[in-house]
Image (tube, rainbow over all chains, first blue to last red; front, top):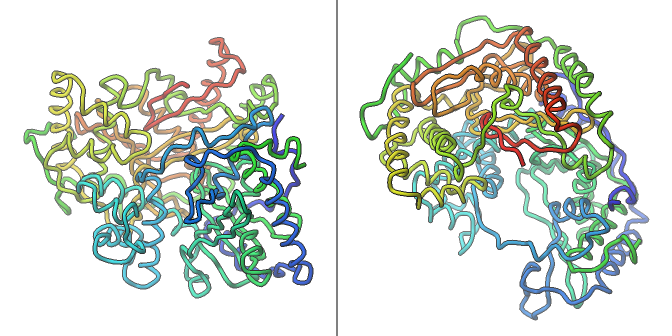
Length: 313
Length: 297
């Protein structure tokens, strides 16, 4: 028995199948769509969702601090929940409701983990007319990582810091992975049609709740398109799964909780280049409730609690 | 083309005649390209769904099995057996080193210390990092073999390849995963180099797989499996698929045709049937692949 089937599901619109795919996907993203409608009910919904998430972790047992994110200055444990944690929680069976934190390994940069950061920086260089292709944009970013600000603040443990520490051949390996990633995102859309409305690699949004155990939800998207009611596009690895539709909605939930209904996109979209699949999920109250439920479950499971299989359902 | 590298070190030379020659063989600029049949991918997918349906019907439909879908790879379709991973046998390590050197050369890096440079590339790869670390500490005799082979590969690759123009949208290590039967069967493939943007009206994508050893009988089936996976993934067949053998310098190239794709579908159906008659039945088993070599977990 698994958790996900018991969760509410979100309406799913399959991606277009005509060629070229970029045109079909862009058509779908820029077509007129009613904005997220619940302007009047949003505050109450946000309050309910916040309560839901906080309640899910309120009765958990002792938390393994070393394995859960980081300690803030006031020594409160802060647990980060992103799309990855949602997907993991969705796959967790009720028989295995124990903490998954024990298997968490310390974060370590690899070419695969750095490809998004570098790839997005490379795409921004194209949109800023500083590069002509993803390969050129990424090459420029990698070449200048030590001196320029293409990868953001350079601090110990940052991607730029890690890149600087690598031997030249290893940097080329990182460049290869990032070039492929950036090219896949570049090929997914007809950028000339969304360029003015698209924000590539916007900063992550966070919403934090909880007292003894603080839970920080991370809203991350690769491209934020402000037209057509707002769309968040994320490029994801492998292939879509049943849990993917909820994970896609996480960025919309964080927008609602952190910034109010005016910032909630009308739709969220996922693009899986390895499988050639695109999903577009309309954002509504049902979708947000579903992802909030799963976020609470994810927090509870990671904290060693029972998850939704028993108490929180 | 069959060349042997002589120099222990090698440098990528953008625009060198030999490099241009191989890229030209792949892209064949000026030659007419086949029009894309927009219905072909759907037809192939329907054919494959029919082929996997009996296997799926005999397998119990539960979520646990769903999560451990049967992954069919080019190697499985070509009925190749073996293991992969730089921590495994020497052949697999050679393949990994050849792919890493190929990556360096097509990105314009001047390879001066072939084995060390290849290990540096592998060390930042999530899957190969542990193996690369072990390779740094293998027995001296084995390391000497690898060092010699790496120099051979680096010389051949640098002599024959050059960085492709950025406008060709080069992708290195592109992964393909085509779910069938609702995700219960997954066709998994990878291309060490992919060139050309997504097709609209005519085929444009070329894909290359790199291996260390010379051409083998299974290569062609692996290539057509890659062509099939790309067709299903992108909705349009690739223009050309190729295998590059770093030890011999051979580039075996196939134009992708409807017949070739039909053979690939047959290969997948045969592989599924052979798997069942071999006693694997409908139990879940995962084959993961790197450039066509299988790993059974």
